[in-house]
Image (tube, rainbow, N blue to C red; front, side, top):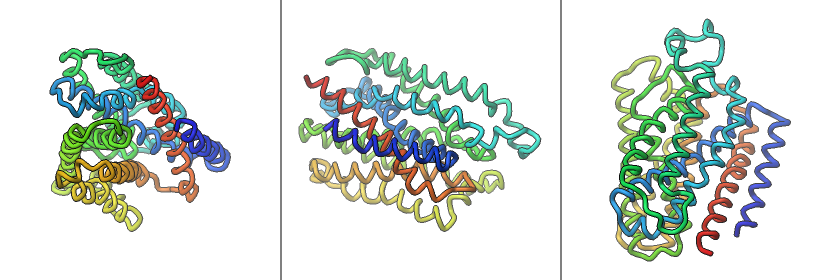
Length: 343
């Protein structure tokens, strides 16, 4: 199974190398989307491990190995972000000379500057690595985790992911700001990580799967609530420097994507998971997981790509190629970790 994953990973890497030769800017945009897609999974896994450490439950006991394997892919995500640190000037408009920026962005230069941006990224990396270590992500067996570590992880994730969202998502359009986005990002990460667990936790018995599916449904409802909350806050405020973020995503190109994201992350999963029979069916859960993973990838693309005015047609193959390279590599690492845990 692991060897089978190496083929699409290699194909994706070859596509990325070709993109680097043909259109480096489009590759940077595609790589940004792909990196942030795969970053959702270890972040969501850390949140799930910390939550289970506080609440307990058969859903986490039966799937602990998968959660740990997902969280253990964090180093891959951090390494994959390194090329993006070299492309800051191509991706973020606030990197331009201060005099060329709007007044509202110039006022944020104390926060939005390259040295502080790099320092914050390093801080996130250290914080998440410490969280993973404290949650025994790289441990073996049923190593116990202190409740204090779980509490600190959840608090640390909330703050670090919020600022990570400001840095890597919202600062692509630095005139925009919202307090809700950090929570929206955390919930999206949890939903995506649960989808992968539903695919990989084939050994889990029916009852724990049904419990996890119920929690998953609640997380998806939370995703819808936060998406609507952010929209209604921006709409009611009606500030010119904020509504532009939604206007860019309401164009003929991106409006259908927003409806498709809604269908994949709420409409279809809610219908499939509404009944107890659906929550207990392995086939239904895997179908729902496929939909949620597709919706999560489209959600990240919808967050990021409308920020760029000069989207290239090369994205049509660079984006799938980047997702194959990183997603295939991440899944291969997770599979390898699970095979080691089972041996």
